[in-house]
Amino acid sequence: MAIAYVVQLSGVDAARYEALQEELGFRDTKGDWPKGLISHLAGATPDGGWCVVDVWDSRADRDAFVESRLGPALQKIRDLPPPKITPVEVYNSDRRP
Image 1: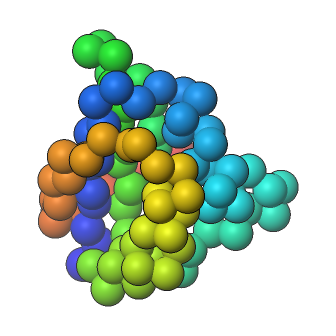
Image 2: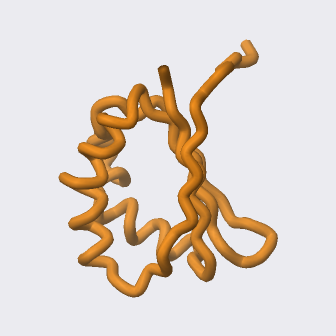
């Protein structure tokens, strides 16, 4: 079953988000996307923070990405606030044509 992660970051803006994307190699035209990532959405919140919603094939795929790539990238970026992370078991994932 797929699982979504809603990640809320206070005080993060588009520039800091883009710096992390660059560090992860996601700005390359080939997009070195991690195994199991189904969908990635990100945007500014009304309170001046940032929200990311990722949908993964499994918790194991997300955990492997965090350990091998996201964790090290976050250490290089530094000074990012601790995120509020809410996992959501995906019950329905309809898409409009």
